[in-house]
Image (tube, rainbow, N blue to C red):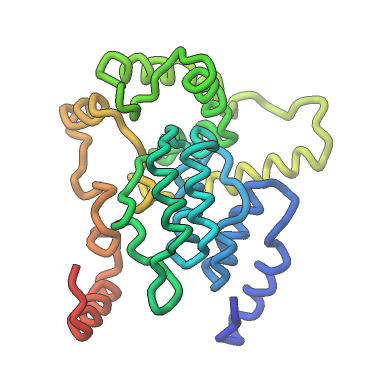
Amino acid sequence: GKLTKPEYAEIYDEVNAHKGTLKSMLFSAEWGICAGILGNPMGFANGNEAGFKARGFQRVFLAAQLGVVKALDFLGDLFEYQTYNIGLNKNLQMAEEFRKLAKNPPLDEYGMIPYLDEIVGSYFVMDFNRNGIVINPTGSMHRVLRELVEDKGKLLDPRDLDANETTREEFISYVKKELPEYAEIFSEKGYPANYEDRDIDLYIDSTLLEAKIMSLTPPEGYPNAPYYNTPEELTRLYEAGKLDKKLNPLTPVMYRDSFPEDLRQKILSYAKEHNIKD
């Protein structure tokens, strides 16, 4: 983005030097997010978040909200072609909806679509890295599920219109049984014998980055990419007293307890002054 405050020049230079890095797709994605925050919305559309599916979907959605029109087309492709690669179930209706918007994007006076979520709604993303725990950072479990659901038809995605309690519980039972097999193992000492020094350095750096990402992730997921739970899982959470209404992912961010009160009041004052209603 354009540097508006010279005192931040060092940060801009650091991000500019690393965006597009070949270190790994995850590093590329995270430097892209940094570039996006600094004013280059295209940064949100680059890279791959590997196993952090909700973060990956939110990132592309944010690019579309900021006016990157081709991100709308990309969102359509995610629902038709990428599906489990980003934690989604195939949804041709959503794919077509995003493509229609791409042909005639409802941009506001600033060239953005801030209310995109009100047009297309929210979609719950299946992500196994949650509750503060990074269990499958590579996304390998999703690749297995894609094969079982889409290629072999051995499981039915719980978000499918034809899914019922039996098929949903079958899916969840399979995930709970198999997910530990795809989890990162930290109990073993040392590194594989075939690791070179650069492999070890990348592994350490990646593990630290994954931990930082998880520490910054809201417990309910992201505003436009909340974590998916089956109805049965939600019932079990409720009965166990673990369902916190304050963590409802559909609650607008500015109305959550964690949102800074002074910023909330500034937004509300601005809305009142300009006659903007919810």
